[in-house]
Length: 84
Length: 429
Image (cartoon, rainbow over all chains, first blue to last red; front, side):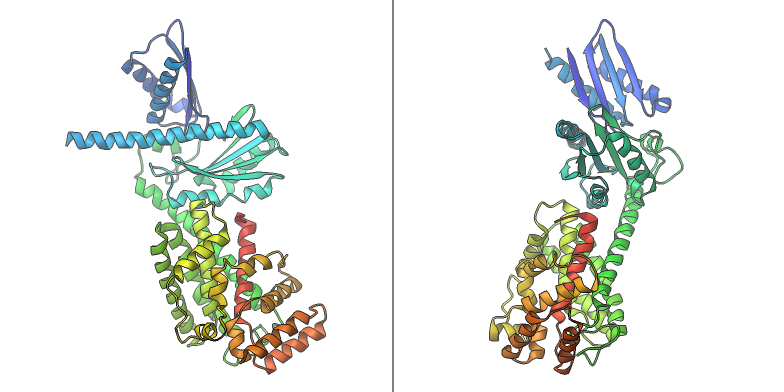
C-alpha cells in the first residue's frame, strides 16, 4: 500500500508513504542541514499521534513549514489506506 | 471561549488545507501540460499569510507576464486558486536546462525577483534554485525567519507593498509620460498644439501642455491603484470619478484655467483603470469589454441634458462624442491599434487622420461651427495623401486659418500609444 501527497514546488514537500517491514524515514531537504531534526520530529510525532507503524516515509522537502509537512503526511496516510 | 477558539482554529485549518490542495492541483495541471510541452515555467508570488489572493500577488505575478516574450513559441496561461494567482508558460522550443539559469538570474536581478518563485518543470521533474534565499527584511536565511516567526506579518506585507507599488508607479509614470509626449511632439498636427506651433489654440502652447501633463499624471497612477484595491465596481467608479475631478482641478491650477487635457483625463483614466482591473484580478473579460462596462456604469443615468457642448451636440445632431466612443468599448481605438504599427511620424499621423475621419469629435464640431462644414473638413482628411508633405502642410494651414482643431482625436491617439506600449509589456489583447 502506498500514498503520495504534496508537490516539489518551492515552500512545499512531496511525501511518499508505503508499508514496510519496519518504520523508516528518509529526508531529502534543501534546508536539511538546518532543519533535519525538526522535520524528523514532525514526521515521527504525526506517525505516533495516528498510531502508524511499519512504514517507509520519504520526504522531498522544498522548504515546507511544519504544518505543511504534517498536513501532507496526513493526506499521504489517507491515500495509503485507500490504496489497496 | 474555548469553543470560539476551536471554531477559529478549524476555519484556519480549512484555509490551510485549501491552499495545500490548490498546490497539488497546480502540480497536476503542470503535469498535464508536460504531456504536450517540453518545458513548463510557473511564476507565483512569494506571499506570506493565508490570503494568497490579495492584489499584491496579482500585481507581482503580472509583472512577469513579459517572460513569455523572451521564450520563443511559448504559450501563457493565467490562473488562480486558493494558493493565489500564477502564470504558466509552456514551450517546446526551449529545453528546461537552458531556461533554468535564466530564471534564476531573473529571480536574482529583477527588482521584484525576490518576491516571486519561478519553478521550471520538464518530464524529468522540477527545478528550483539551489541555495537558500535571504530574508526580505534581515540578513538571515528566509527559511530560518519563517520557521522561527521572526518578523510580523504586517511588517512583511508592508515591505512587499512598498516594492510592488514603487515598481508599478515607475512603469506607469514612464509610459503615461511618453505616450502623451508621442502625441504632443507630433508636428505638423492640423491645428493642434506642437513643440513649434500653438496651432488653432491661441491660449495654449507647448510649455503649457507640458505643465498640464505633469499635473495630471499622478492622478492616473492613483486611479490605477484604487482600481487594484477596490473590490466593488460601482463604488470603484464613484471613486474614479472623484479622482478625475481632482485631476481636472490640478490641471486648471497648473494652466491657470485653460482646458488642456480634460478629455484626456476621461479617456486615459478609463483606460488605465480598465487595465488595472484586468491585471489585478486576472479577469478573463476582454479589455475593451471592461472599458465598456466601466463607461456604462459611469453614464448609467446620463441624459445629455447639460449645457456642455457635448450635450448640445447630442441634442442637436445625436452626436455622442467621446461618451459614445467609450460606451462602444473604444471601437475606433481597436481599429486604430493595427494602424499604429510603431511610433514613427508616419504611423502616428496615419492613426490621427484615421481618428479625424472616423470618430465623432465634439470639440472639432464646436470649432467647425456647423455640421455641414464639419463633414466638409472630414472629407478633406479622407482625400488627404499623408505621403505628400505639400498636402499635409496645406491642410495644416487651412485648419489653423479656420481655427479648427481635433482634441478628441488627439486624446485617442494618446490612448492608442499607451495601450500599445502597455500591451507590449503585459499582453492583454
